[in-house]
Image 1 (spheres, rainbow, N blue to C red):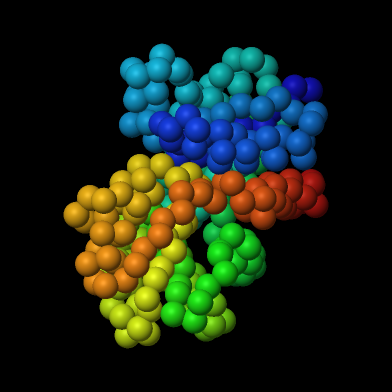
Image 2: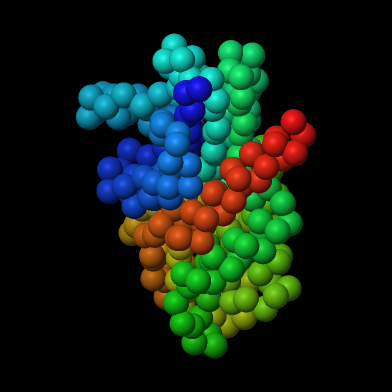
Length: 263
């Protein structure tokens, strides 16, 4: 029986960032399943189009990848999402997988990064592992993507857990709550002198480079500096973190074990 491993991420148009984060996760997961052929898909059509027009590189979306696997005769397929939350992008994967599930003998999907209470605690441990040593008046601010999907609440939950565990880090989101303005207000109340900015995203792509770390007037770095808080950006995506890579491996293993127990 032909077996496939399909790893699906939002994607990135930055080649170096792709290698450090997406490829690193793909390789780590593939090592756990050496009997399977590895395939890649992105959920962002915008990034897929950009790579095609700029670099002449074709990347499948989830539907195209599944169709390719059917045509190639694969019968046992496992999919791992590299998304952070159970939002719109992850639901794209689930939707397309359901439409193809009768075309395979077995088709299973590993959950995104934040899918259970234990996931939040494991993520916090991974975040702490990459945080620098901090003075009493320093904090780390993690930039999440945010979402219009109700799963955006994961960012506020994570932020609250950091606070209750007295970890000197805060979470904000580019496109939803918690907004950077509320993060800055909290930092000022705590008389924070300096923050270290880190992406809470799989890759350090457009949002990290432009919205977080640039000198543009509305970047988080600029807004913090205007508030009198020194800001040092770190352009390291979550995909570079070995503890994050292992979380994805564990998520896929969990769904495989559940399927075997139910069989």
